Image 1 (cartoon, helix red, strand yellow):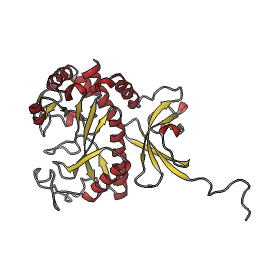
Image 2 (cartoon, one colour):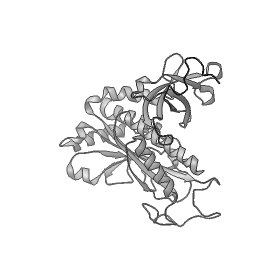
Image 3 (cartoon, helix red, strand yellow):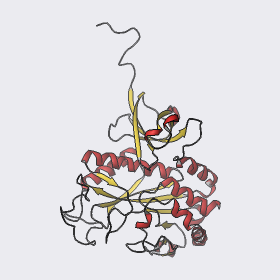
Image 4 (cartoon, one colour):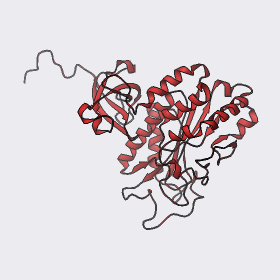
Length: 346
């Protein structure tokens, strides 16, 4: 069969592009397109669109929402020159979509650039099997009380380590700034840490780590829950502990800057709680290593406080502090945005 004039199917080196975005329910969506060759910069990528009425981001009568590429990562599933791209969502009049929290975060980080804010987020999550129960839990019963599971080793203490290892390696391949993992207090609950990252990069890297985790769990036939209290009763909830520092807190005498920031955080406690995740009242009860949602507190090495100053920081007199209030389902862009707004721009 004669080859079509001027069309050589082997002429172009094609690669695949997964576009990832956040929907109206703080969930992740993605769609794939074909690229003609590898790219070196996000600026080389074109805008795309999707049906916003199917994701809760637009009305059916005006449903086009546009995806603007914001940050790209090597694809650990397809590998080669294939990439996964975090996208911002925009309405067809050019304004940021209501659920595009990256846009506001980016503006806030530009306004605070001289303070060079750094973030490190600790993402807790729970794994559920196809039967709707926490993965590995006995049928018709419960595992033993909490105690041996945190950073545990051995059968009956940890579950799905192979999947967690696969996620860790996928993050490393993709260039996500993942800094560690550990089994958590409740069986079938795990944590990964992302950071340190600067400004809006924290949100990009954490959302990509979440996406990779959900994709890998899909291949294992299990689901990932970011609910802050996935099981009622005497079980730990799941948070997104947020570590934060600036030039001022990292400098000599930085403890004074930390104390001033904590005073500002206390005054805006309720505004922070509003963007620190849904159903967080079920987790922030004053029990299970949490402070109460209705009361702001702080302390050195105090895991039951809203804000924890690590002991090493108190000794050194400089460094960072940890906001323990955010729920595991909180949006990292919103966390970083309001933290900087409160401590540096208010």
